[in-house]
Image (cartoon, rainbow, N blue to C red; front, side, top):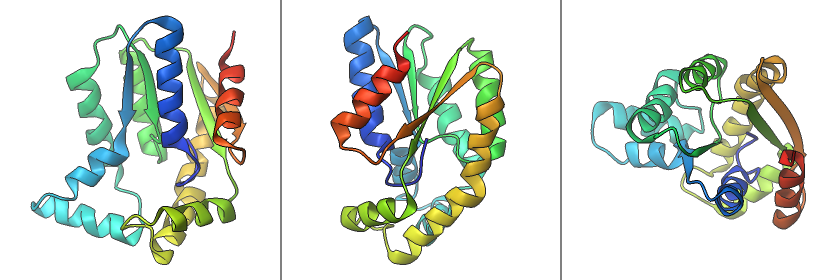
Amino acid sequence: MGRAGSGKGTQSVLLKEELKRLSGREVFYLEVGSKFRAFVEGTSYSSLKGKETILRGDLMPSFLAVWNWGSSLLDNLTGEEHLVADGTPRMLGEATMFMEAMQFYNRGPIFLLHLNVPADEVSKRLTLRARHDDSPEGIANRLKAFEEETKPVLEFFKSAPGVNFIEIDGHQAIPDVHKTIMNALAP
């Protein structure tokens, strides 16, 4: 978890590759951003409303986030693989539903990695990335959403039973962040 632009996607992919290499087991990669981007390209009323939400830089409502990752788990999880969740859950209601899902699937302990990168740095990164939703207003809204919606999720996970909360300095070079993550996860 972390602010938009903190490197969650990059580090999740590196973690996924390293877990597979070390264990020989497959890794189920739960990433909601790409599924949301595909969803908003549709022409349904819901897709159009979702597109408006993303263009404003707002978080998708919890019911859509739970549908997104919930359907991915239901349709694809075999129970034999590692699970890496990238950037979800982002709201408190989603966090409780996520914990219910992890209990249902007998997943634990959970290692929650918070990539902590200052807001001014992620703002620079998002501006350089320049996706369609990386307008100055969109970036400001996503940073505000992190402060108002996602920070309480981090607090929830800090004290949740069965969760190992690990703070990672995400304001380092990509290989250094990856090394820090792997050291934090080492037994």
